[in-house]
Length: 256
Ligand code: 13P
Image (cartoon, rainbow, N blue to C red):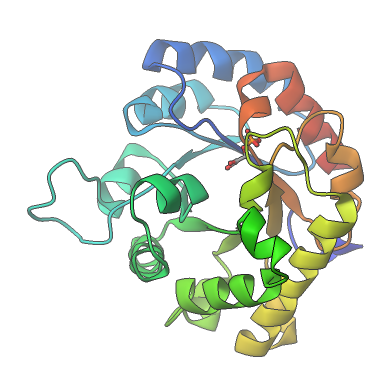
């Protein structure tokens, strides 16, 4: 039912893993396993691996994403990468506002918003990550945190641009911890995100947005999570580095 109105997307977030040559090897392993996928399949890789990923995915159904992007078009920003640079390399998606960037690199909702707008302006598709800390969940303010992130991260993004935005709900306490949100917890927050989008953009626009779950999603728990009405896909860390596990998650998205 939900597939009638929005596409399921399984994206690997490789984080700081794999060299360019290792990238080609892993994509060559993944490609035959996901060739019949009934969902969109993306590998988001480190900047230096992007060219190898674009080359290795040629002629396959796998799309390539970056893991971040600067908001300026060009200029004195040593070490940074612009949306135009990513576009020219052949990137289609960009992960933005990942909790590791917020936690370790001073990313704020304001900079996530600036990056989101820059990525959209360049014709790329942002995967905007939101999620609460364990402390925030325990204090019962998950919805406040998420509502604030959605509003600020998408500030000034138009309804037309929203069609190219993917949201990833990643509870910070579930990332890399082996502690997955239950399917009910994931559904509750993904449904809440859609309701917030509905308030900002109207229900019809909100109904079309792909909302992924991320946080220790793997080949064992993907099926249950992806069965949920508002969980349209996954942003996968650890399990995306193992071809068989990643392919099993793609399969779960295909049947649900
Ligand atoms: P893990 O799947 O390793 O928990 O990572 C999730 C994540 O952060 C994806 O962006």
